[in-house]
Image 1 (cartoon, one colour):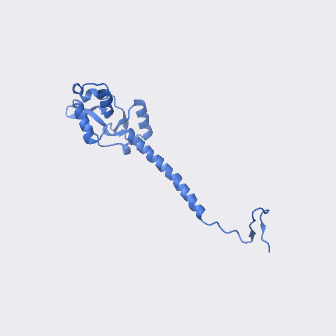
Image 2 (cartoon, one colour):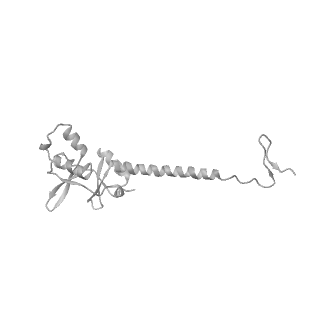
Image 3 (cartoon, rainbow, N blue to C red):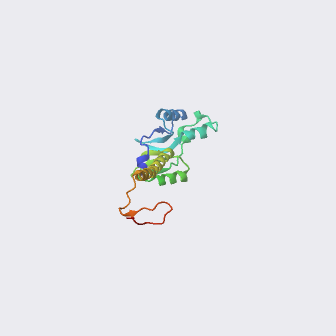
Length: 174
């Protein structure tokens, strides 16, 4: 399973000059925990970082900083961890571990931003895989039970089946 099948394609961006309140409002309105921070470069926008709800809480509120003095670009992590949409789950997990982040930007083959994948997305995919593996075991047990519910085949004609406590098999008595 590749990251392109797991990532969220709907990316919510915020301008680097926006206020923290504007960023928090965007997160609430779009029900997201991360915003891609962009800066205007001529006619286009360039990714300049990422900011998460956790950044707002830990870097601003917990330090009792004045939110009015900070723009979102000041708070955003400039070194953004990325994976390619063709990468697998194991690669994404390794990048998250190496970078110490819970979200990765996803790029296409041309290195253009195409999505975002979160720790939760990877957990859900792994849980789904574990459930599918559990179903294999469950179906195997159901198959065994179905086989055991069938009546035993009859003993071959002419063969005496020994009673409990008797010695061995032999030809049927005439």
